[in-house]
Every structure is written in C-alpha cells, then in structure tokens.
Amino acid sequence: MRAFEFKHPIKEAEAVSTPISTQGAVVLNQALDKAIAMAKQIGNKIKKPIRKIIPTNQPAESIREAKADYLTLIAEAKKDLDVLAKLLPPATAESQKILDGFKQKIAELEKIHQRELKKAEKTGGAKEEQDFKQWFQSIKQILLALGKKAQGYSDLTDEDLKAMTSKQRSSAKKVAVNAQKFAEDLGQSLQALFLHKIYGQEETSLSRDKVLNFLQDALNGSVIDNARMIQEKGVGNLENYFDPSYKDVFDEIKDELFKLKPPAAGSANIGPGELALAMLGNPAEKPDKGDIKIGEEMFEIKAGAGPVGGRFNSSEVGKANEGWNTWTKGLKEIVPDKDFTDRFTSETKSSGKTRQKLASKYNWNTKGVDALNKEVLEPYSDFEKTKKLLTDTFKIIIKNHDKLSSFDKAIDKMINPSDGTLVPNFMQFYARMVYESYNEADGVTNIILINTDNLQFTIIRSGQDLMKRIGKDFRSSGGFNWNDNQQTASPQFVLA
Image 1 (cartoon, rainbow, N blue to C red):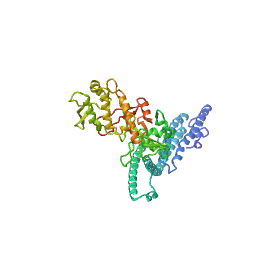
Image 2: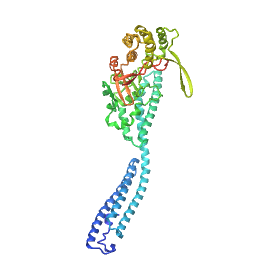
Image 3: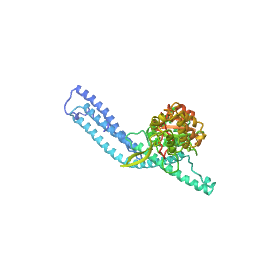
Image 4: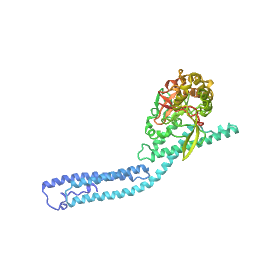
C-alpha cells in the first residue's frame, strides 16, 4: 500500500462514523499526516530488499546477506506498525483498514521474498559450487608450488631432460616423483587447515579471496621478510617480520603452521619452522646442504615447543650409547670398589607390559651429574682423573674432536680444579664442543632457534656468540642418557 492510496477521513466524510469537533479534526489530520509519512517509510523498507534478492546468479554469500537484511527490515516494519497503530485514531474503520492493508502487504512481500529467494538460491547455489571449485583448484595449484618451493625443487623442462644421460634422467625422474608426492601430501594438509579455518569455525576473519591472495603472495615470497629477520641481534619474534596486511590470516594459522610436521612421503628432509620460513619467506632457498639459504647465508633451523628444543646433530657426533662403555670403564678407574658399576636394570610399563632395560645412574644431565658429583667425583676424584674420564669418553662420541680448538679447553672449564667435581654450568661448555663439531663437519655456522609456541627466535652465529649468550637468550635443555641409541649425544637448545 502506497502513500497515495490512503484516503483522508476528513475529506472523505463517509469514513467518519461519528461527528467530530473542529479541534478533533485538526488532531486527526495531524495524526494521519504522520501516519501517511510513516506508511511511505514502511513501504520503502519492505520493497528495497526484494529488488536486492530478485537478480539471479548471485553468489550464495550475497543471497544470505540479502536474506538477513530483508528479515531485519521486515521485523522493523512490523514494529513500525505498532507505532502507526498508536498514531491513528483508535477504533475507527479507517484506522483498521490502514493497519490491515499494511499487514496484508507485508505478508504478500514475504511470499514474494520466499519465492525469489528460492529462485536466487537455486541459481546462486550453482554459481557458489562453481566458484568454490575454481577457488579450490587455484589454491591446490599454489600449494603444490609452495611444497616444491619448500624443498628447493624446480620442475625439469624437456630440454633439461634431453641434456642428461640415461642414468641422470632416471635419477631425475625419481627425484621428481618424490618431490611431487611430498608437495601433494603437504598441500592436502594445508588445504584441510584452510578449509577448517574458513568453514569449520563459528567465527572467522578469513574468506576464500583473502586466503587465495595470501597464498599467492606466499609463493611470490612476500609474506615473511627473511632478509630483515636475520638481522635480529638478540631475541626477536617472527610476527614482527610478517606482512601486516596479512595479520588476520597469520593470527588464524600461525599455531598450526609453525608446528606443521612435513609429510613422510618423498625424500625432503624438512623440519617444523623451516617449512614455514621456506614457504612464506623471501629470500628463501633450499640449498643442497643446510636447511635454508637466505641471501648469501646458510642457516640451520632448530624449532621446538616450549622446553622441547632442537639438537645440534653434527654428522661427527655419535649416539650416547657409543660412549657408555668408555664412561663406565672410566668411572671404575676412579672408584676403588672393584664391584662398582653405574649400571642397573630399569623397568617401564607400557600397555600393561613391563619392560626392562639397562640404565645408568650418572647420565649426562643435571640429575645424573648431581649424583655423579656426590657419589663418585667428590669422594674419589681430582681434576686429572675427571679430565681423563671426560676426555676418553668424548673422544669416542665427538669423532672430529682433533679438529676442534675448543675441545681440551671446554673439558678443563667443566671441572672444579679443587676437587674434580663438575661445575653447575658444565653443559654450556659441552654445547660449545658439539657446536664446533657441527661447524667443522657440516659447515653449520648460523643456527636459528625457534619456539613454535610463541614464535620467538634467536640466531647463533659462532662459538663465541654461543658462549656469550647461552644462559641468557637461550639455554640447553636436558642432556642425554647413556643407553640412548636413537638421539645424537647433544643437549636440546631452547630459548630462555
């Protein structure tokens, strides 16, 4: 019902059932003028969203928004009717006619809305499905390229293959298959992550377009400023080197992304943290040796969550159990009791089964060394005896010890000259030895430590840098057990 459809009850005398005074007519005129003005507003409200719904071939998101807008305005129009009822003179035929007319109009428009909405949802749903498939294929291709970027792999051209010998081509094709498999599996993990973030949460700041743009820029290497990041001198946070225009995306995915474990498929040897920097950062290159190349410098990345850090896995540092016999032999030389041994049988329970395994009372960690000082070194040893114990044992474990300038000095500094016990910060000196072994054997100089819980990081650049900052910016965490035949005999390193 439009404003011009209203009949003024003063001008149309038959609409007024009882005589009214001149003053009453003025009041009635004013009320009806307000009612007519409000009627026009209500009419505009309930017609506007219909024009928004009727066009077909709209994306589903637009349809949902239009539907929400429409239902809100209809609800407001119904509230306006209550106000209108108060403006109109009560208990008159004209008032009831006006109100009934609007109620009917709103009901008719709701029917139109439902009909047009179904039509739009049908065509819009088809478009939504098409748009989703196109978006999904786009991110699939980008993620595949990012997976290859993380490995430092580039697809070979026909010309590349033609220039190879038969043996080289066979080897190259095998590498290509492995790289493809790794990239596909990684891509599937990331697809699942983004789909969950967009569709699996009640509240999200992500949209398909935002994710697509983010991944495209990640492929172009403009999401993390690696060049600026490696200039950090102390402890920094990776968030400070992330493109701020993608903060909303970063906040949604950072917890999962930096802890993402690379797929087992393929031959890529990539760890958490390294994967994120290689995929998102610039410059970033996967070298033949080392984790990541940023500019002209090589970096090894050691990422861990909280107290769980990374080890300096030098190729010339063996497993702890390789030095255990020498360790036990050295302890027996110090203790006069001919029946002395550091070994005992430990029991562990798993899945209801009890397992027995030989263990040492004096493992290379704080608890083991405290017992060693109290029970062995303080009562029976001196500086020279302890030095021989450590030297003999660590020559077995650190195989390139003869190339390390720090080897003898570090052992000396571990020992109290007065009684042969080990000093409280013994692990710092051992850390210097395994760092230099890593540097000498594998060319590792720069090591980036990352805490994936809070994305803090620091960079160790030399043995001197390590000794200057260990215990302040970062620390050794734990140590190793002499019966461990799995881990390199190195402590873990974490941010302090």
